[in-house]
Length: 125
Image (cartoon, rainbow, N blue to C red):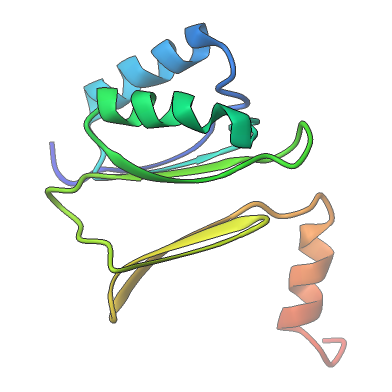
């Protein structure tokens, strides 16, 4: 299998059953990078992610959920990527490997389409 990048709305990683199911899939597909959205885990559950990420052999960055919404987990293989900078905000996480390469993960509000269209077409196209 070639290089695999996984992007996945996991719809919550709070239960051990969901974490084990996700772990089995990630161990099977062996992604180089995996961006998980909607982990629904708050800052108090960060230790859970630390041990979970180690169990699948990946490094990670974590942006906690806001209330019961959101939560981002960015995972990568240390053998493949050397991270030199990480920027985290309330709803996004950027991980830079070098000056010419970056991985960005964002959680957008429900009305994101209208916001994107306004940004793309500022003159009412």
